[in-house]
Length: 371
Image 1 (cartoon, one colour):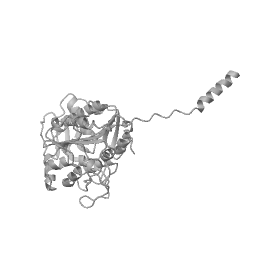
Image 2 (tube, helix red, strand yellow):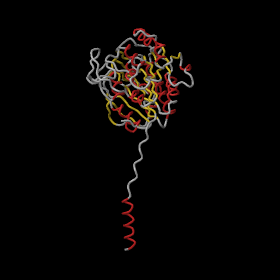
Image 3 (cartoon, one colour):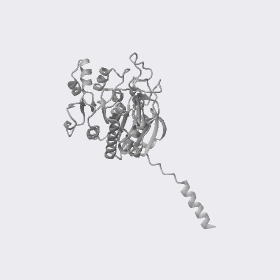
Image 4 (cartoon, helix red, strand yellow):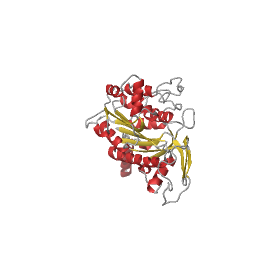
């Protein structure tokens, strides 16, 4: 009896002890958002089949956390890049053609309220920030990270806001296509592009390997979208990683399947860039891939072990909106179906199930530990 009483007392004592506090989830020091412009599931799938004769050979296919995200804009089922990227980087839907302004905006007519972007939250907190894109650096996807305009075509105003940011010192690394666009927009604003960038703290370098080893801010602009995206991402990480507080980096790859063979090759190269960035920056970096919208491209036939694009050659059909080949078909339109979200690193466990494009902003904020 005495032993039984002692056991009961001991058990009661253990049960009365407070439970240990749950271990806080690790926070991301850095976030790298890879955005495949028009990289719907059919395009991602076709790239793996095209290159590897296997539908699950991309690095993306092995990322541990996967979801599907719907991509509608505030008023349309089919989004454009302006509204699609706005949702991802601000957590709010807006109308097609509008960049990081609320849905009170009317394109080319009226401004909506400016929506603070994940890049601007990072700037406000002293992190370094960057955009890398093989589209123009003034185009809708990168512009949604740092500008707030009611018309994606107003590149003069987009440039003005790149040069005069709302938070911090603005984008620290700008690498991409669009040198001619920047020069033209600067001239229209009464500026000299190189001088205006320098005044904003962005020295314009002629090549990636021209960026000084100790640089903390840099710009490299090309007049060719076929530059080495992987090398650009690595150089951006070099620069941004010098900030002990961390960084936010957005990387866009234009994956509209206008030239099908070239696009599928580019998907594979983009996937390789994601792999290298993820391997280099783990374990304190959330790496997230998604698309702003899908694209009307499909595999409709074909035999395993035979080339997907048999009987075709690079460059075919790029001037045709609609194209039907032996194994694939394409209509030159954005489409409304869900897109894949793939992630790894701190906060990636929130990527699951069916999401809205606006959820990705909150996932990135939570990974940093921000409200």
